[in-house]
Amino acid sequence: MVEKSKGRKPLNVKNNMWKQPWGYSEGWTICGGIFITGMILQFFFGKIIPTSFHFPVNLISGAVFFLLLLLVFLISKKIKGKPMQKTEKNFTHEDKIIFGRRLRKITDALNTYCDGFDPIDIIANAIKSKSWKKYPKNFQKERLEYLKGLRVNKNDCVYCHGDINPSNILVGKRMELYLIDFADAVLAPPEYEQTVVASQVLCFEEPYMTGYFGKYTSETIADMCLKWLPVFDNGAATIAANIGSAKIITSLNMMRDKIYLLIEKERNRC
Picture 1 (cartoon, rainbow, N blue to C red):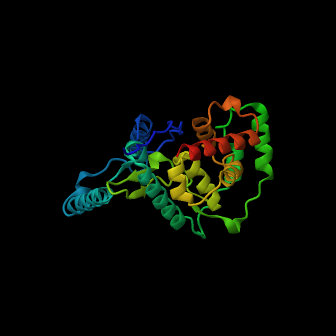
Picture 2: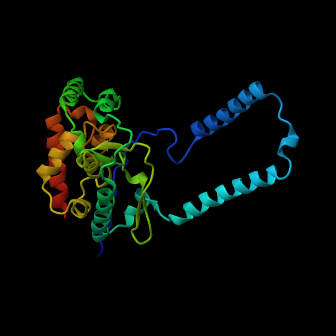
Picture 3: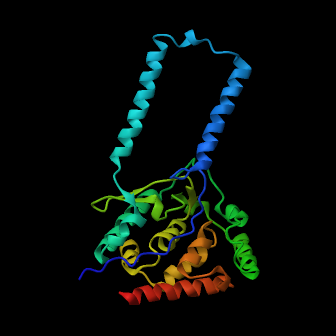
C-alpha cells in the first residue's frame, strides 16, 4: 500500500498586496491610479485632440499592445503547474524525497553572491516586525535583545527568495518545480533560506528533509532554526502552525526545544 501525504496545517501567511491571487484591494488601487493619472494629464495638458491618434499611430499602438499581450500569454503557458498545497496530498514517500532534492537544487542555484542587489537589512526589518506581538512579553523582549546582538557578515550573504512557502512553489505533472513571487527577495546567509524552507515548506517531515538536507541531525536543524526563525518575518506564524499556540512559547530556548522534539517525532514516524 502506498503511503500518501498526511497533509499540513495551513500557514497564516500575511496576505500582502500585489501577491497572487489579487483581490479587491489591488483592483481598487489600479482603478484609482488610472483615474488620478487621467486627472493629472487633464490638468497639465488640457483636452486631448482625437486626431493625434489617427493612422498610423493607432495601428502601431495597437500592434505593440497586442504583442505585449501575446508575450505575457506565451510566458504563462510555458509554466504548467499547481501550488504545492494543492498537489502534495497525492505525494508518496518517494515523491517527497524527490521534491526535497529538486527544491534544494533550485535554492542552491539561487543562493549565489549578487553584487548590486538592494541590500535590505534583514535584522533591522526583523526588529520592526509586528508579527510577533501575540507572543508573551518576555519572549518578545528576549527576541529583540537577541536580534540587536546578532551580526551578519556581508561576505556570507547570498541572494535569497526570502519567502519560499507552498503557495510560491508550482509543481508540474512530472514533479517539475517552479519558484514564483520574488517580492521578498533579500541578501542573507544560505541558512536563512534553509530555515524558511525547513519550517515553512517541509514542515520538518522526514522524507522532505532527507531529500533537501541529505544526512541531517535534529540538533543541527533545531540550532539553525533557533538562529534564523526569529529573523524571519513570518516565523511567528510558522512556529504557531508547527508547534501550537504562541502563548506556550515563553523563551527562545523553549522554541528551539519544541522544534527539536518535533523533528525527532517526524523522524521516528518513518
